[in-house]
Image (cartoon, rainbow, N blue to C red; front, side, top):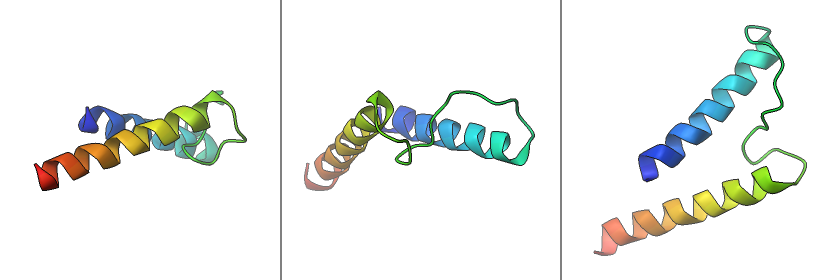
Length: 61
């Protein structure tokens, strides 16, 4: 699950960088943690919380 979340964040950031540099066509994808509210920001925060919990479980067993 942690790998999937990291891949999702990386894909969103890569698409946004591609759009900003003109390499990709404009899409409606939001930049992680930089959107102006809405469900994307809430879901990104929830995924970050789950990633922190996964890290804690791995370190403390």
